[in-house]
Length: 406
Image (cartoon, rainbow, N blue to C red; front, top):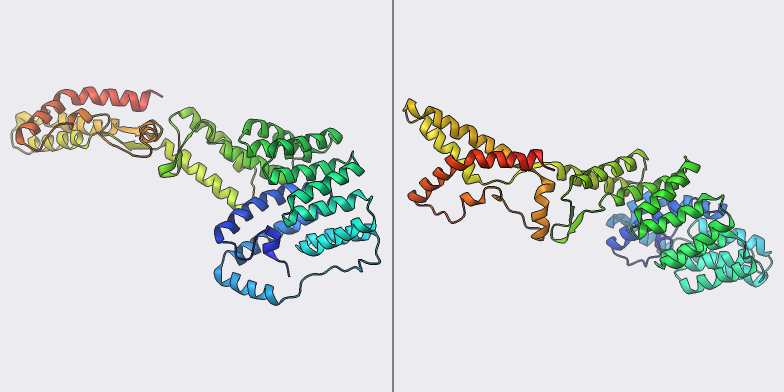
């Protein structure tokens, strides 16, 4: 029985939010590791990815999680299938990777330790021990073991790749990039080392650099799902470049149409990769919704101007005096035209939302009509005079601002 908690590097008492966050992180790691230079690591990553739906269904459902925890307490664990006292180092190494592939990190760690004792000059044994230590959360020890492996075989690009992965996991970006660059220098034919460099760029929001590398990697290996996933992440996350995050409403907003067009190009590229990961697809949908919302037109004029013009026009129209019909139609038509002219694109309204820290307001294009006006008869008449005189002028200005000017 696979221990999902050990596989994710979590305690059994981890919260649902912690599980979700760790799952998201591990999915990215395992997806990238499917391209690892060692077949054993590829197999481990593929096995772990296949278990993700079941892990989510089990640990994120309170009833299923409770039953699973009970099974975990009583079920026998997958154990090493070798007698570690009478075995060769190569067999121990093979068994260690097998145990990792089924999520049994503790026994894999024990077997790897034995392998280094049996043959202390075997770099693969030290690399396996370093890998197990990293999986177990003993990062400093893992770094030490990998450096021992590198000392024994300094031209093995896979060791530098694994070491870079450990540094990346603890967000020591400079060290991670250095190790990936060394791996790429040793074996420039393998795109996986360059793709790892692209991943570091993406995580540091250097999207252009990451996209350039990953597009080249995918060009070399067009069917590589790992590269597609990383590139889709890069495209999706780069869509908000130039946008402003407004914490109060927890949204990214833009004030420029070119930002919307750029975001649309990137999100369409991301969708075209047809990545199956549900979290990433949901993220794409969120970005698409933000793009669509930025393009929508919303009324942000003064309701008093619209209501006053239409109501006064209707009152005149039904007064019975045929002589006021042209004036009544004038008011109604321009009241409607004014309302249409105030349908501004959301991206033009966003500047005020950003400046106010998330507050929204209306009446900005025609605010002069309502400011300082009370409810008295004289002020209402004064308002209507302003409506009659200024309505066409403001309508024209609004049409230019909201429909003609970018």
